[in-house]
Length: 255
Length: 255
DNA sequence: CGCGAGCTTGATAGTCATCAACGCAGGTGG
DNA sequence: CCACCTGCGTTGATGACTATCAAGCTCGCG
View 1: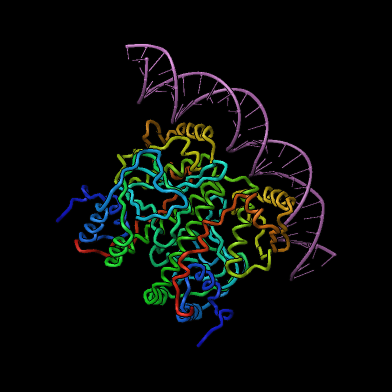
View 2: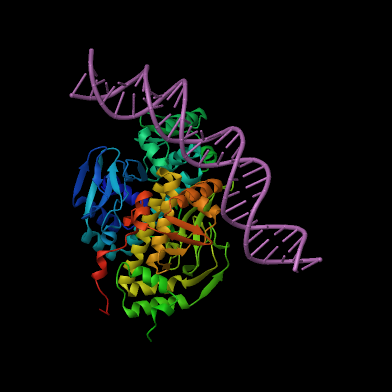
C-alpha cells in the first residue's frame, strides 16, 4: 500500500523529520498507521491537557495550532512554545509522568492519540525514526533556549520580529507557506503572553514593524516581504532550528 | 571492585540520576569508568565550547559551575542554563552536530570527556541508564521552560528569588548544601545576564531580597533561612524539577 | 440590531536601564 | 611594606521603555 504523502495523516511530521533524515516508505507508513489508530478533535481556545495530568497517549498535532503555557497563581500567563502540525505534545510522557505545564489550542486542532506501547514498539523497530524524534526533541529544546534569549535580552521590536520570523520559517518547513505569506492565527493577547509584553505594547510594536514595510499582518495572515533583510533587522539567525542537516545524505530505501 | 560513591568521579551524576531510578552497582561503576577515561580542567571564566563547534566528546561536569549562554552581535549576553556537577554539556552532540550556543565556566571546572562511541555502547547495554539520562534531558527542557516564564512574567524581585530557590534546590539534590546554605559563585553581572536585568538593578533587587530577612548572600555563599516561606513569596514551585519520582521503586540489584 | 471579542489610541505612572562615580579587597610590582 | 590596579559591589541621578487605565472602534455573529 503506497500512500501519497499528501494524504498521510502524519504528513507534516514526516515532512519535518525528513529535514533531518530520509525515511523509508515503510517507516512513513508505520508512522502514519500509528496516527490513524485514534484521533481527536479539539475546538479553538480549549485545553488539550492540563498541568498535573498524567498523559495516557502521546498526542501528535495533525492539524491546527496549539501552545504550551504556564500560569502563575495570580493569573499571569506565559506561552512557552507553539505546537504546529507535526509537533508532538508530550514526548516525555512515559518518563516524566506528570505534565509540568498545560497545552491549549489556538485554532481547532486534530490530534492523533498514540498509545504509549505502540509508539515504543515502533521506535524500537526503527532506530532511524527514534533518532529523528530525538533530533526533533533536541531542536525543541534549542528553540526554548532561544526564547529565553528573546524575552531576556531583546527589545520589544526585536522580540516580536524574531517570533514572526521563527513561526514563518517553521511553517515553511512544513510546506504551509504561500510564497512570502502564511497563516498566523494568534491574537495580540496571545502574542503578548508569548513575548512578555502587554497587549497595548504589542499593538504599538506591531505598528512599528508594519511601518518598516517588511511585514504585513492582519486578518490571520502574515506576510514577510523581504525575509533576509527582516531577519537581519530583528537579529534572527535560524541556526538554532537545526535545519539543513548533514544527516540527510544518510539515506533510506528510495534514493 | 566496589567504589564508595564518595570517591566516584561521577558521584554527582549518579546521585542526581538516583533521584529518578535506582542504579545497580555495575551501572554505577561503568558510568564512573567512562568518566575516568579522560578528564580536563578548565579555569574559571573560560570557555568550554563555542557556538558553532562540533563536539568530539560528551562533556560531563565533574566539579565546579558552568553555564550555557548565547551572545547577540552587539554584545548582549543571555545565560540560558547553569551546569552544576553531574550535568552533561552536550547530550545532543551525536545528533545535532553543531553547537547552537556556547558553554563557559563560572568557577574552575573539571570535565570528563567521554568518547561518543563509548557512551553509546554503555547506554545500549543499560536501558535503565538510557532512561535516566532521558529523564535528565527532559528535566533540563522543563527547567528551560520555567526560565522562559521567569524572564517573561515575573517581577525583578520574583525572578531573582526564583533563581536562587532553583539553584539551592538543585544543589541540595547533589548533596552540596550545608544546612540552609550553599555555594553561590555568581557575580551580580552573571546574575543580571541570567534574568535579563541590568547589574545595577540586580544589586538593588538583592538588597530588597536581603531586607526581607529570608536570605543572606555574600562572599560566594547563599543562605535561605526559611525556604518554604521564601518559595511562596517568589512563586517558586519545584514540580518542574521532576524530583520525587514514582520510578524510584523500580529497583536495581541492591535492595 | 445589539453584543462581545479583538484591535486601537491617548494619558499617566512605574519599572528598570543608563551614566557616572565611589568604596573595597585581593593581587602585583616596586 | 606600600602604591597601584583591577574586578566587583554599591549608590545617586536621570530618562527610556513599557505597563496600566480608560475609552472608542470595527466586525462577525446570534
